[in-house]
Image (tube, rainbow, N blue to C red; front, top):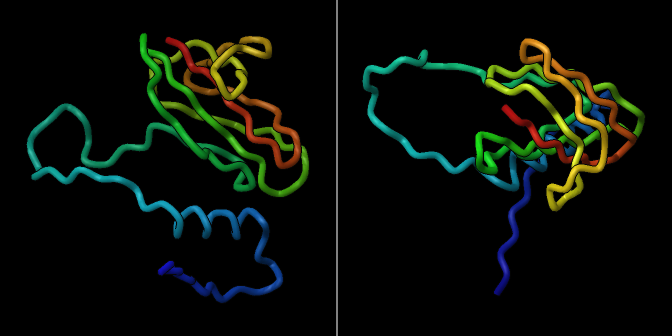
Length: 132
């Protein structure tokens, strides 16, 4: 027997596709968390390592891929071209567009003081490799 869950989200006409997709994401996969008791350390209790603008662009995944590199996937959600501004609090030097297998398929960009901008096509999911 299959089990289905539904979530009703009251909204008005200003509710966008980006809002809808964020709700789906929040409902679909809760984060996997490991809870530890508080202990002293070098990092602050709360810290944001990545900030993405505009709101119509979703960071769908971020993971370490070895050798100090990371893989990032961004998705444009509003159906129009977007210039995504990414601010990172990570020691990375370059960002390279890749295919879904991680093979470079575009020019490498320099990450300047943790900041880089990338162009995204409407509804496109784009993968990037971030290297130290």
